[in-house]
Image (tube, rainbow, N blue to C red; front, side):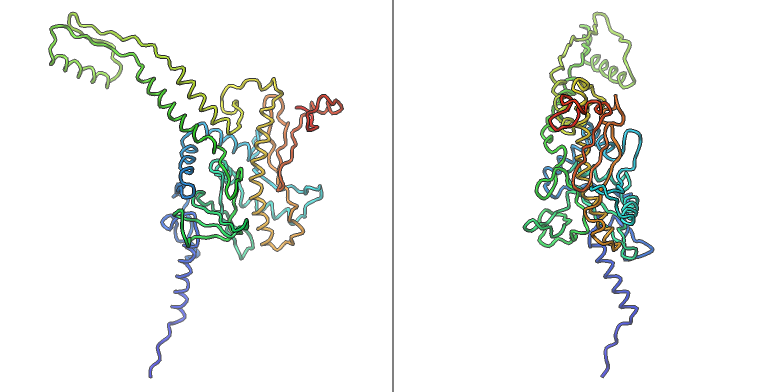
Length: 429
């Protein structure tokens, strides 16, 4: 009786590698298979083709997602305000673009462990350049959330990179307030999602957190965006239709053929350029109809909806090239409020960065008591009043929240004067 021949070891290894490749491909990726390529160094891993960017697909909360995508992509006021915020979060007025770094002292003023400090600095330099921080802030402010997958190099025992995921395809799954997993879906309802991530693999940045997800900085301005589009279209139509027209009066002897030939000549002349001469038969007249349209009401309407959208960003008007009134009369309070707004955004950014550093330190095998709860992140200085003092604020935040460090050298002389202090006990700037 003949026994069935067993497949060779080479065939078994080949089959294992092929099935492993398919598992890795469909395990979870920012991009579909068509937007990835086969890596030559390891054929079981598919690389990302950064030249093939894919657009956000509105799956979760599709109605709001479409409106926010349109608002952030096509509204120049919102785009300008967002870029100002991103620039202030990751850099300063003197050109410092370090983005974020780790302080060598803890919140209790004790020095941070030297090895922990060096590991964190190396991780930030490798994983969080200023461009990555800009992408995080743009997604977080525009859509309310930003998701990134951690890539782990097991041989080097470190976080190898971050892969940003489509915001509106990601779902956060919690049971009784406990995070279970993250899903990436192609449809709103999927009973058994093909792409899932364990909690430790995903960094979830949330701005203005509400329940599971965050809220966009411009969430309350979606209706104003619709009104601004309608008002702009109405102003454009009224402006075009109010242009004074030329009235061509034909002589009595002109027939239909002459009128048609004259009209054709005028149309050809307009295509060639500006018409400077008219050749008319006797009693023929060319005159311009009088028109004095009043477009002020429509222009004011457009300005109102623009200002309401910009108000949500809390960016000072002078940073957007718009006129600013009354800033000096109220001691520069708009600039101080803007600095606090930047600090609040940095606090949301800090939470996810600390999670990345915690993962890096855990992979390195550093004991928890040497770093957990002891990391403090610092950001570049920003000026709260660019017209008077370039060093009036130090924007700094840590994993627990904000550090209010707005200060002014002029305030030092007012420390002993109770009338020079506000209700919080801090000197007026």
